Image 1 (cartoon, rainbow, N blue to C red):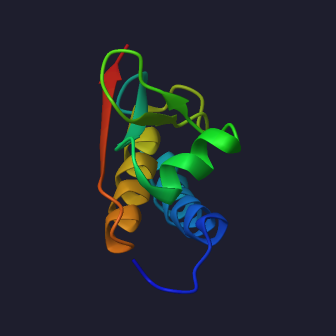
Image 2: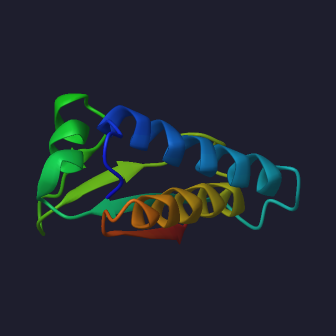
Length: 104
């Protein structure tokens, strides 16, 4: 993880990357209705930051937290693009993250 970077700055960088990708995908074909989310492990400062700021929910069935993509209505392609970019940026900061989604 990059030193001297706050958890808020990491979240904002990930959100910005997600919005850039999501906005671009939103211009295209909807590709169905659906949902997407980012999953992070249940440890570390970022997990604590997410919990303290109500930016994600602790997973009920497995460890970690889920950050739901609420932007873009049910535009599956835009939600997936956001989640993928957000997770990729988290991984660049050394925070293990994955993304997933489902069509409705």
